[in-house]
Image 1 (cartoon, rainbow, N blue to C red):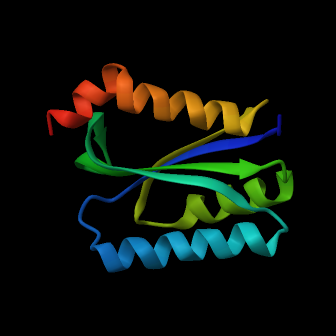
Image 2: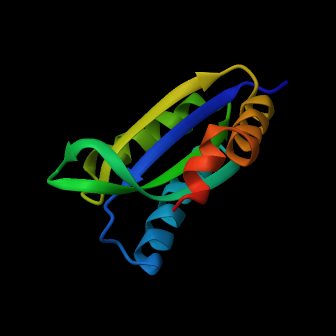
Length: 120
């Protein structure tokens, strides 16, 4: 059981794949520069937002599971605050990173999320 953080980042839907990759590499560099590590990264893709954010109805969702390195999360959130391509983000502390990721994958492949994702 490994403590860590779960971070969801919603990017501007108008970004190209190359721009997304550049931005995500930048975030990875910030995390690793502070001694942190991305344990898992899941790309959820383009999804409709519950309400408009920065005049956007859709966003590109990315889910990160990070190891337990508070300075890395703080540095990442500081950078996210100033990135214009980031619509929203949220980081929460989780007790078991691997367990949370396994639960997400199970739900994604077998649960209600699988039905939602397969309909797209």
